[in-house]
Image (tube, rainbow, N blue to C red; front, side, top):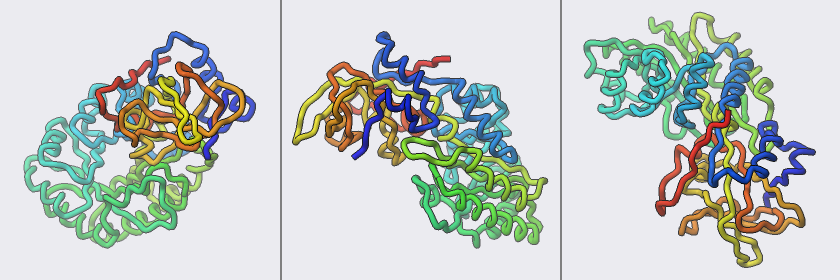
Amino acid sequence: MTPAMNLAVTTEQPVSRSIDTSFIRNLFSDKHLPSPLLLLSKSSVDENYKSLKRALPRAAIHYAVKSNNHSAILDRVQACGGNFDVCSAAEIDAVLRTGVDAGSLIHSHPIKSNEEFDSAIEKGVQVFVVDNESEIEKLHRYTDISLKIMIRFRIATNHQAVVNLQYKFGCTTDEVIPLAQKIRESGHQYYGLCFHIGSQCIFVDNYIKAIDKSSELIESLRQHDLETSMLDIGGGFPVEYVEPIPSIEEFCQPIERALNEKIDNSIEVVCEPGRYISASPITLVSSIIGKSVRDGKVWYYLDDGVYSTFSGIVFDSCQYPVISYAGGEDKLSVLAGPTCDSFDVMYDGLMMPDHNIGDRIIFPLMGAYCAVSGSYFNSLKRPNYKVID
């Protein structure tokens, strides 16, 4: 059973360094806020960007737009000096609006339709990722331009991240040199290597192992007259939701050390954080619209659910902090969404005090892989964003 966090308890004993209890307190007292509502803090975007940059100075930051494509986040990343990792024509359009140079973007999707490929090139994108021979064959269509092609590889790890991003993409390490040679034969430039050991990864050893293998591959490629210009170490940097994790400084220290020891300074290193940048700037304000007692549990029906902002429970395997204001004895409870589908249940077995219809429940850390993967099932209202600073 999962306990909800009473505001008074979080003030006395903070359960997450990412939760601003004074900010949460104001949300309960402000009766004029509509519900459901997503509150976006631009200063939190800045803070996250700068914290990661301090912790991992060797790596240039290319924000993973797929985690949250809100224009306020993109603007703050660009203003902080960051760049972008994009995967589609629409994402390219969104970031070009910030004034960033298309030639500096990284198109990290290893599989692209011909139409997506053409669109990206027409917009000026030059750096692309592949992980198989069929994708390299698409390069033969472009004879009047020299593209910079990265190869994404995968490694075996002792521990998996919460979201395994090596399951669907990444060639074996034995395939890297043959693929690089085929890139060269296509008339385009083998540009570098990339890996992504998974999202919400708390196992720093996965990064170290991938960096070690990158070093070996770089040397082997050099022996075949293939020089590596860039190493992309992906994202996956973890966020503290409900379980304690190391600080970003502590987490990145061995990664920074491995990069400096194993990767020559002539090679540009980049990373692709999504969650670490976008999760904590977003807080969801939701309200109870219905209540019943079923099979010994108190069921609360909220105005947001799995088909909307809580889609991250399904697609991102994530559980978000639940903060309530009511006091009293905890009761076995369920939080469900507003749709007519029984699948639309976020928390079953939650321990929380009794609440009434109209009461608010606050959910911090709702910025990453939430709104972007939601739908309009039942044609119900989805929460609007409100930029708060």
